[in-house]
Image 1 (cartoon, rainbow, N blue to C red):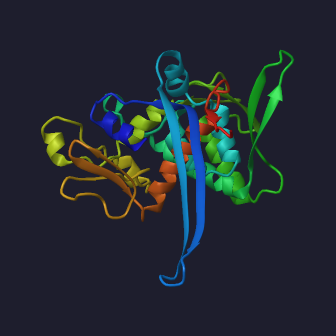
Image 2: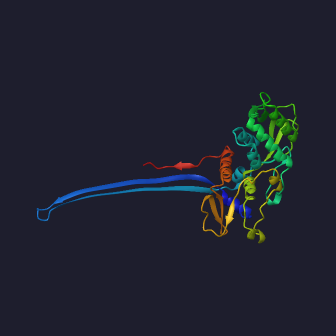
Length: 313
C-alpha cells in the first residue's frame, strides 16, 4: 500500500496484487536412540543415549496481479455511498470519513490533492463536516435500508428530532441549509452523483480506491531535490485546511541519509530514499489501518477469499 502511494506520487505505474492461494507444507520428524555395552571389567562399561528431531514449515503464498475487469471493479469503481454512511453509523467520525471518501456532496467540493485536479475545498465543506460531527456525537443521525415495490433497495439518511437539545437542532438546521435540503424533512435518500434531483436527496460523488490512494499520496513529504528536478510535484499544502484547523490526513516522511528509519510503523525503500510512517504518529497509523479496513469493507460481493491448502497426510 505505501509503496504504491509513493510510486503514484512519482508518476510510476503501481502494481496491485491479490492473494490467490496459501499453501502450508509442514513436517515433523523425530528419532531417539538408546544403547548400552559392558566389557569384561578391565576396561569398564559404557552407555550412550541420543536423540534427533526436525520440524519444517514451508508456507507458499501465490499472488495474482489485478488486471482487466478485476482491476476496474476493485480499484476504479467508486465506493458505494451507502457504505460511506454505514461507516458513520458504525461510529467512525463523519469528518474523518468524508475527507477520505467523498469528492462532492450536493455539489459541495472536498479538497483534491491530485496534480491533474488540484483544488482547495469549498469553505462550506469544512463547515458541513464539523456540524455533522457534532450532530453525530449527539446520536441524532441514523441510517436504514428500504426496499421499494420494484424490489430496489434504497438507503435513507435520517435526522432524529425527538429528545434533542436546542443546540443540536440548530446545527441540524445549519447542515440542511448548507446541503440545500428541505428544513421540514427528516429523512433523505442517499444517491450517487454530484447534484441532487430535489431537496430530499443527498447526492454523494464518492471516490474510488485508486482515487483515495492518489489523494493520500499528495501528502507525502517528498525531497525538494526531486521536485526541483521535475521527478515529482510539490506537496500540496491547502490553505483552507489550515484556516479550518484541519491537519493533514496522513504524514509520510522521506530521507536519503539514514540506512533505515529507527522507529517506523511501515517503511519502503524507493529511489534510494526511505519513505515511512512514524510509529509514534498515532493519527497517521490510524489512517493507514483505516485504508486497509476500508478496502476490505468495500470489496465487491463477487470477490472470493484465497484458497488455503494444508496437507495433513
